[in-house]
Length: 112
Image (cartoon, rainbow, N blue to C red; front, top):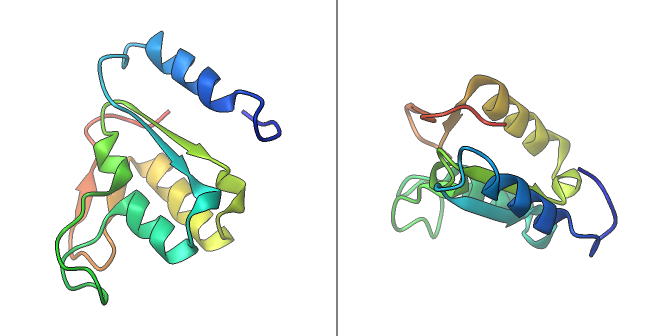
């Protein structure tokens, strides 16, 4: 869905979520335009302890937090082309790689 800021995209996404079969699962909103690129990738995909300076613990990321529910990526067009490719790969395969992780993590349910 597209539209200028303040037109209700988040409200519409929540309404769709609440009327879907996933309504009992999490709804996770991520404002892609509000975070720096490196932080955005870590927020979305998570990271493992020690993968970069300041990574003092494992972090599961927003995709795993929304697994089985809905993730709404607001202003995703503001993400770099490289990150958009990673998002597309995650959406198409239903799996993701944590930043610097050895193994791939499989989402339990598909992404829509």
